[in-house]
Image (cartoon, rainbow, N blue to C red; front, side, top):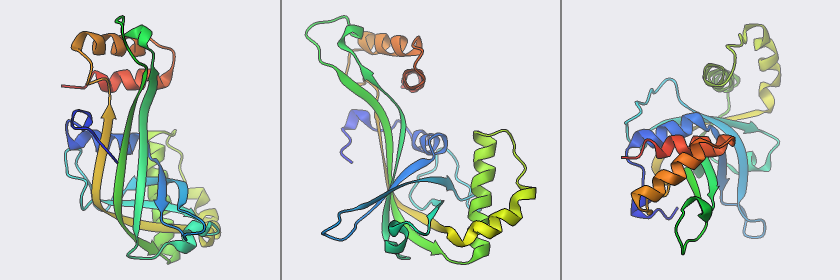
Length: 214
């Protein structure tokens, strides 16, 4: 991912927060020349057995994910193979009307993290169930209502043979936080204030990140 210097994340915590807050990743792997790459949307979490602080470097971090074993993408993955996970955070169109200056050009403010790493396919039922349960705990705590999965563990075990779980070790990460940093301060403030007052959740999320800029 091409990241101009003024769009780089102020600290590692920005990338960690974006992944945790936007865990539906797009996993991309090289395919055959006649078919092109594989791309699958899937939930990804940080491995709870290897805790990561917000300010830690992502290199060496461990992530967990899973997909349908019937997906040809799963069949193409090999332990030791390389995978790219992309995460998209708050984003929104920026109309020149917000700038209140002429000439001007429209743009799109957006946030994204690209993580490269090595895959370890988990073939045992117990390892697969551990990934699924860890994912439920993470998402119920962050996005759900505290659902207790205890009564559904038997069902989990029944469907586990169709689930392809994997462990992912990060070898490199890049963050793109394009939040009008190239604009003069007064223009950036107008964009942030306009987004913050919008009824659009994407604009408000983008405004929140703009407020965190140094």
